[in-house]
Length: 469
Image (cartoon, rainbow, N blue to C red; front, side, top):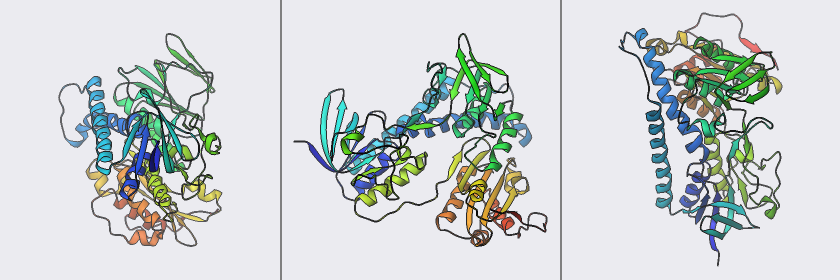
């Protein structure tokens, strides 16, 4: 007879493994199926390996700036790329082992293989040792996404790469063309520049980071330009050919020659050939749509993370995993929490809530407060005065709508703004919070005060920065 579990999770990425642990914590018998390494995209070809490599790159960047801090470094600053990669691999192995040990501690049953739905309540697990069918009371799909490629372009993964390959390069290219100036493209540009790679970024939209607030892309591009990173925005790659080198013809008439290309043009849901038709599920442009309880149109089947298309971020998947399990276990748990974005360039970028453009599109009257880090004591003291914080408030209700920041430790600081948005506070209430001094985080309070026309650490102004919907 087939083994029965109260809950079966397909995929052990940041959404799936958290869902499995939550289900077990709540008393369910849980199985999880994964065909690759535990941890999914985030742990193996995404968040964690990129941050490990970026940490080495940022250290090089800091050493190059040591003289400005009165610290003398003698000799050339060099790096050992194989050692950097080895350190990254060790980080991944440690965290994969951590996930596996948590499964053991919670008595989550792990099936190593490819999972396919095989009718209502049935999952077929295909592995090297054969096939096995298991039964489930509830099913959580956490199948994630894969990098998008451009049809008709060369497909050689050694030359025309996605983040899947680029994070594990054995050698570095002399020249790198990055197609796409979103989060992944910008992080790679920042990283590779410090490793001595000549970097060119081509972005189709008018600015870098086009999905984030309009105030962030332009200053980041200025930082990149100072470091020698060539950026073409509002530009299309008309053609790409690979010979001894890779040549890209751009819509501005220029030709870029590179040794490798990184495609960072987005991701697509990994929902092909997982047996959706056997349970009557359909997709919308590949995504499995869900309600606020993370449940699909088929009762008892939930979908979390990248595959549902709501927010393609690891922490969103984890939070949705908890929500899906709560609902699967009979608790009413609608998921409506704000999801912060983090970009690990240096300086870092953090954002949560509405952008200025989104507020305008929704017809919401807004007032904005902006506080430059160049006026912040901690930023000046530690030599990281690049950046700013922007707070957006509803001009009529005073509600906090969004916080967008660039600067040192922005990815850590944005959590406080996310907490405030989660509790639906007003900007006045945010301005009344006491932040520790001196910290980078207190710039959020300063920007909130500026949005109210109350900033004490900025010259007085007669008119609020307002924008009508």
